[in-house]
Length: 170
Image (cartoon, rainbow, N blue to C red; front, side, top):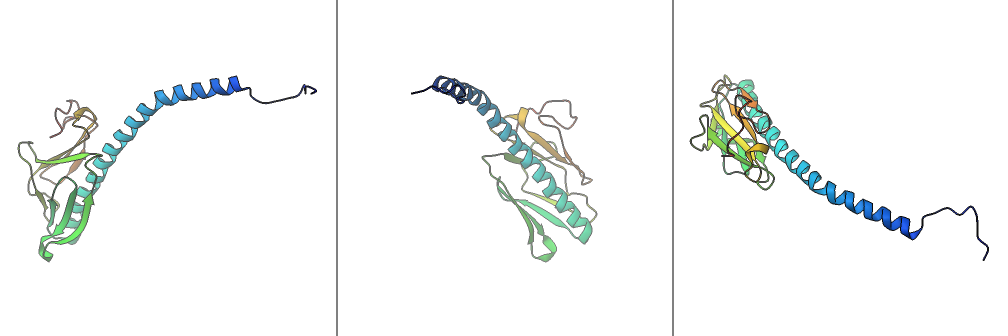
């Protein structure tokens, strides 16, 4: 058989070396990518909760009516109108496997099961919410609700003063 001088392509050895390099890169990248996805899931849960709280406050102000947030369990929360036989206005559902949300009073000594926004936008009592995954406070978020009704999402792993590390997820 005559040999072609312009033959182009890969040899089997070149292909095997390329596949081995791809396998090494994938082995290094997959754990980092998994952690990236987990961190984004926790942040998304924190942003979603902040939006949920802001919606409840805005609804109370705009409709000049009390709005009650009911924390049924760690995966399903509701916004209700007490003046209309606890009509459910909005529901927040999230996966506890992606992020665990804990609702506590403002000094974080006791769990709370509801929060009441008044028509002026103030809240019945301050509250704090921690959002974590795998009980890791360094990767968690804190949301505080002041008695005035203001809502703040603190930086990842930080407490109210934004300099002290979050000590626990509960």
